Length: 410
Image 1 (cartoon, rainbow, N blue to C red):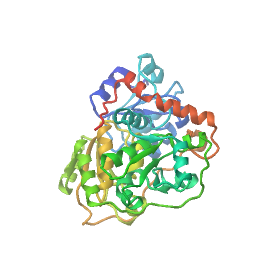
Image 2 (image 1 turned 120 degrees about the horizontal axis):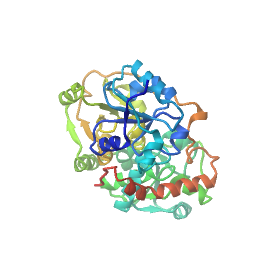
Image 3 (image 1 turned 90 degrees about the vertical axis):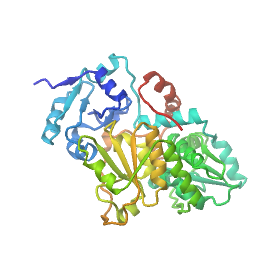
Image 4 (image 1 turned 135 degrees about the vertical axis):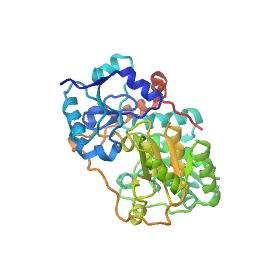
């Protein structure tokens, strides 16, 4: 039986109107990374049973699936129906139909978060220093502090000499302790560009007293400049946010249009079953394991901004964030709101019954199906690194051609 279809134009209209829709690419991640619509999310056909109920919490939401001619759609529709999903259609013409309609294809993974980061730098002129300039500051023992905003496991694999691990969502909470002297220049780095841009601009938006700059092009730029990296480092930043930083973070969220709700209002949001609500606890994994609010999934703030297409594939859904200290949720929410999400912050709630236990983590795909990021590991070719940077630099123009993003930058 021929599956019901929806045209590329109808999907694009839904995305422009911010209607709820999950546009899912059924191919393996490596194929997905070769080209896909801006707001498509990858859910490989072989992982639907594993991922769907976590990533697509509402069974009657509009789901549109596609492949590139591999014949994955009919079986995927059957899988979704078996799981109880009632509104699943195929994209007419598949990926080729999208392209034939004149719409853009974006490469890589987490593409729209990366494109948003480039737009932030373009509009705010986020300051940065080249690897050679930072290396010179290190050699001169200048008054600097380098904060690495990647996940800790990425940091431990390789890091800029002397840097401290402060994952992105923790920056405003921990920068005061990492660089207590306001004369210290804070240098923010990630693997490539996005997380360092967002991290640097987070500290600037939150009004920290220090001068803040990004390490331009992160560890990729550092490697291309033939600078040495450390391996196996374990330095972590401690909590040290001032009351002023907390107030500023709250103001940043307000300026981005984030709405604050109490526990009763949060329950009312969850009760609206005609809308998808994602609930994320943006603290670190250890804090989450020690005690978290029922129904909230763990996703550290910095990674949530970077990986929002993986965490929340239903475009047009609502997002509710929790954090007992507030600062991390404020800053994370501010970025999600600027990316076009209807975003809420939960005030309070931690004085009641909490669940204890580690985060639930979806198993990683087979390595042979996974896209190898050009900023991973220590054996990536310099040509691949440079090609990745060239791609990122072109994202602002591609967003302009695509014209569907709806991002704004405060």
